[in-house]
Length: 338
Image (cartoon, rainbow, N blue to C red; front, top):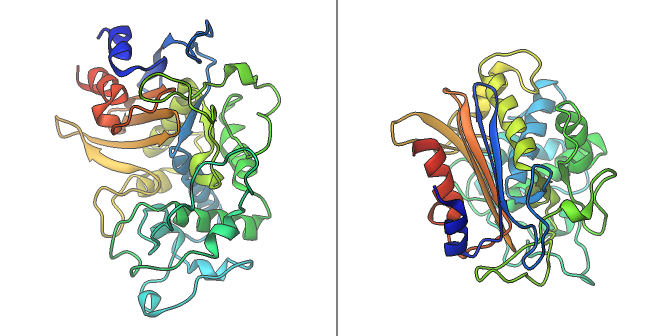
């Protein structure tokens, strides 16, 4: 595949790719620049905005806490919430809102318009609870699939009320540090990258014409759902750990039982795992994927968890089209099926 030619076709300044197989990194390849018009080359240390792939990592934290007995995935979350409560109604009379159905985007919430716009300099920074005060249940839990950032705000509030910690700190303790990840973090609004991470290594966002976007590194109010920054290599290592757990290998974040639960269809949607989405490839092999699309960035990962292989692709471009129709999707199809 002539990746530079395809980058030119889609006006993508920079691409990072990591392919993994048999529980280890097979190769990483990097193309272009972190910022158009500069010589800042994309390399193995380049950090991209993972956008909604953040939800997979937040889910991994919740599942580990459930595994440790700190949380119950099937308990009414109102029993955990202290600073805000979900208003009971006829819609929650039979199925309550739980961590499990929130992770599977079946918790009953529709997103309120404009609740998750990117933060701009000078904006008031909302806390998740500010968003939740506007939230309402719109359907009976587990009767519909509705992709919901609001649901993950509820999860974040549960974590904060129970543990007294926010997602960035929990993820560092439960995921990043155990896996030895030094270039993966949830970027909190108004803060600098963590110690040891240079801003110069963080990609700048670009629009579909290749121009730098106004908010060059967009930040969103829902940290747990959209604030992950990482390299393709380190993101692949998170995915490898999930796959290793699925196969019962030692030293993983999740147990085999919990990993299999994560990668099983949940509730009313056969394509919904817990924090990931389930598909089959052209040969019928089961896969899970997670993807992100935000201001100036687009990315996706796909993993053949039975075959223990997959690929992570991250770009500093918002192409104006879904991942599967864009360069990200072309690369994934080439690596997995080419």
